[in-house]
Length: 356
Image (cartoon, rainbow, N blue to C red; front, top):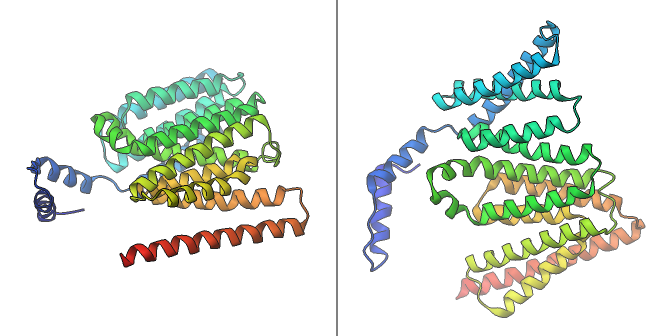
C-alpha cells in the first residue's frame, strides 16, 4: 500500500493535471489505506476458512464417535446454536483467531443441520437458503458472507437436482450469469453506494464467481446435461450468455477507446463467430464471460479459474461430440487458423497505434 507521502504526491499530480479545482479529504484517504494495511490478507482469510472446515470435521467426527446425540432434534438444536454463536462471535471481534472460530461454528452448524434435516424433502435446502440469506444481510463479516453466498447457490442447485428438474439448471445458470455480470460492471457504484454494500462487495463478488463457475462445471460435466444436443433450455441459456459477452465486449471497446466503426464491427463479428459453436454448451460461453469480466476489473483469481474451466469444458465437449476423429481434427485445425488470424489482425492494429 502507499504511504502518506505517496498518497500526497498522487493527489498533487491529480490537482495539476486539470484546470478545475479539486478537493480531497486527505485524512480520510490516508486512514482508509492504513486500515487496509492492517486488514487480513486474502491468503489468511482462505487459511481461516480451511482451518475452520478442518476443525468442523474433527469436531463432528468426535461428536458422532462419542454418540452424544441420541435424536435428530438434538442435532438440529445444537446446529442452530452453533450458527447463532458464530454470527454473534463475528460481530464482536475481527481477529484471525476469532474468524477461525466463527467459521468453525458456522460450518459445524450447517453440517449438523444437514444431518438432522436430511430425511425431510427439500426442508434442508430451504432452511439453508433462509439462514444463509439472514446471515448475509444481517452479519456483515467477510468470511461468513463469502460462505453464505456459496451455501445459498449450492442449496438452490441442490434443490433443483434432488427434484430431478435438470432443465431448470440452465435457468439457474443464466440468472447467475446476469447477476455476476451486473456485479462486475457496477463495481464502482456498489462500492460507493454505502458502507454496508462496500463491505459486502468483495465476498459476494468472489462467492458468486466461484458459484457460477461451479454451476458451469456441473452442466459441463454432468452426463445428462453435457450431451452436445441443442435443446430449448440450453439454447436460451447460451443465447443470454452470448449476448452478455457481446455487451461486455462493447464495454471493453469503450474502455480501450476503440472508436473506429469498421474495427468494432469486425470484433463483434469475430466474437459472434467464436461464440456460435458454444451454443451447444453454455458452460464454454459462461467461462468466456467470466474471463472478460475478470479482465475488465483486473480480477486475477477469477481470470485464472475461468481459464482453467474453459480448457476443461472445451476438452469435455470435444470428447462428447459424435464426430469422427478426422472431423474433430479439422474443427481444431480450423479453429487454430481462425485464432491465429485474429492474433495477426490485433497485433497489426497494436503496432499501427504504437507508431502513431
